[in-house]
Length: 359
Ligand code: FE
Image 1 (cartoon, helix red, strand yellow):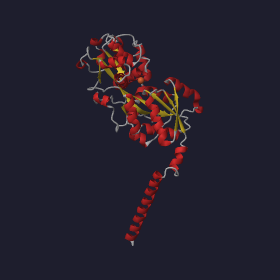
Image 2 (cartoon, helix red, strand yellow):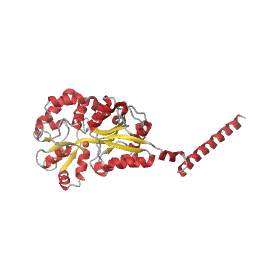
Image 3 (cartoon, rainbow, N blue to C red):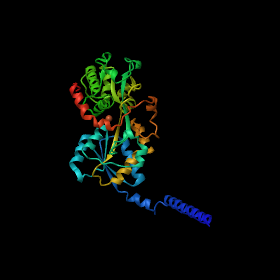
Image 4 (tube, rainbow, N blue to C red):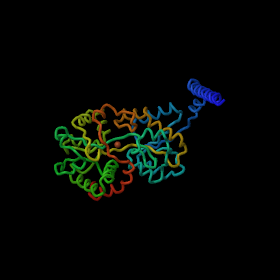
């Protein structure tokens, strides 16, 4: 009696499984009359505030629309301007997502209460925890390292070791690095505060200010160009700028990059500084579900591959390999740090840089 019941229960489950899987198949085959295709037509939209200006982003958003039917409206602007705009618009904002470079800046949006927490298994699976805001208000999507590039003529890489070493007397008047107003440098100092404490971070900033080849000017690429112009022998810059220069359509820029080598500092100590560009759902998003779908898509293997391919950034998704160029630079140890720390220590970093006279 018991066994019969048991078997009929099993066969019931089996039948149910067949029916369910059959439905799944017919849905896929029958595009045109099932519910997923009506989603295609009425996928709605999502409004993205972004400070990124890469063609690849547009391509990735177009692919997302093709796949989901959700239209992506892109509103471009300068980073801090977009933060101000979200703040000013408040509840009335049309912005569902904020996409920008640097964890420090993402944290500014968070601190102004412009973002909201998002719980998503897909995101937890695709994006490492240390590249995600502690309260899940923003998610890293592309990763970069802040490295040393050096003149292959004037510097033997065996002379290089750590960020701290750049403050030694042997580099006096030889170090190129951009202004302290720049968030990448603020985040670099913020990482040292988190890892080594304020006092050491200040010592480092002082040492760098003392060893600068010139008063800071220009962006990361300009530091590399200044090496070629003989103004200094090494520079601190983000990996993707170096990748862009090596592959530049401008022959001059390419020539500059080819004279330089890339070095990942602090491999035997605290690791090389990394940062991300990342995205968060706005506090007053009207299309929250679509916004989450877009972030999930951007963390997927496909989109991560596209990001990596086009902009020489490291994928955050472990299942995706960086491009051959980045692989040729070798694997490296990263700072063991939750990037939320960069935002937390930003104000102290700015204060320190001002105190030591880093222009
Ligand atoms: Fe940049």
